Length: 253
Image 1 (cartoon, rainbow, N blue to C red):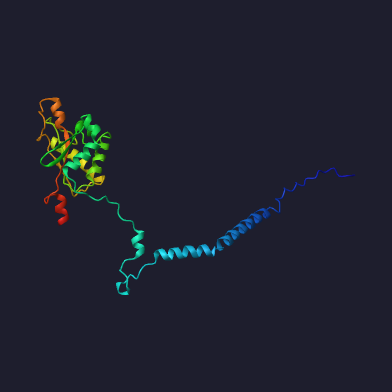
Image 2 (tube, rainbow, N blue to C red):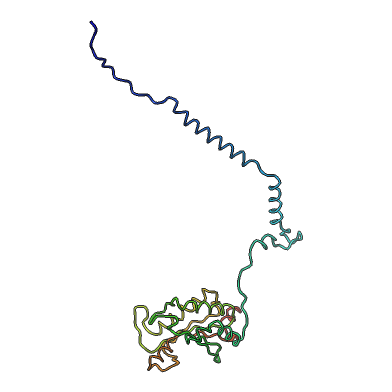
């Protein structure tokens, strides 16, 4: 009789493709081929262009003998051409009348609105900047609306050799805050911020003098609000150049 026993043998698992490694091998060969093509291409130098570039670089950096004994002047020609000259605007000796005329033209709109004024004294030209143009009440930080005025003024002052006084003034209303204990502190802080802004825009710090006068030099009566508003100001005085100016003393030392 035929046996009815079932075949209990387990099916063999499907074996992975034995040729799968060929895919990786083909990728490797392709990459190597690309590498050798790049190396070959980079090794092919255009000899004519190379000679032109080499000749130009040699001519540019070739200098005269640096040793004066060998006929040179001790200065490399390449250094003269390669390093640019400093871009510093030459400072001029202008008369107070010329400076006043230039400032009046630059600030004509502000002067017409009464937001800025110019006057000539025995000391020189005085530019009067009211508090409302530059600062908030009781503050020394220059407002954004006042920055264009200071920046325009810096362009004029940066070309001058004149001594420049930046003076802060307040009214007689007492002030005592965390930042400013008195009007002396406030007036100096305002003058300092204006002066430092001028310096950052190219005005020579050799020519600049920062001063604070609190309420000691009023131009109007402090008994009225209008008078107090006129007393709260920064004055920039452009003096005539003389032998006692800070710029002269600094340069002669």
